[in-house]
Amino acid sequence: QVQLVESGGGLVQAGGSLRLSCVVSGGTFRTYTMGWFRQAPGKEREFVSAVAWNDFTFYAESVKGRFSISRDNAENTVYLQMNNLKPEDTAVYYCARNSRTLSRTSSPTDYNKWGQGTQVTVST
Image 1 (cartoon, rainbow, N blue to C red):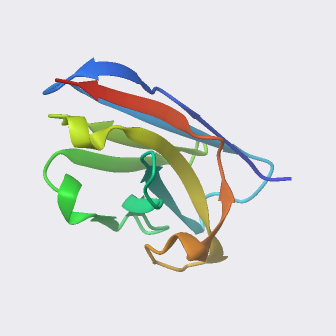
Image 2 (image 1 turned 60 degrees about the vertical axis):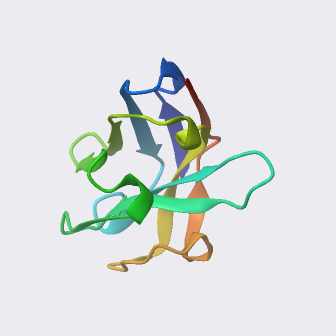
């Protein structure tokens, strides 16, 4: 059974940085696109960033230039480095695995394995 476990969330002041990690166990990792999504209170879950099996990366416009995604296939881990954080980045951040191998999409409905989420809070 595939399990995704996020870590690295916390409370940080605006302008600060955090690094999220997501470890995948129980299933294939290297051939799947891995994504990060977030959900703020009262809002829908939204795409943040993803890294494909071939290391192609893509980002939401709101985080371009501030966030960086990477993966370590040897460790079955995907990372999200978040710099220059803003209060509007406050949300629960979720790691997810795409439902198909060799697929490159950003819609939450295309991801079928999810972690439990980690809270990121950015104060003013």
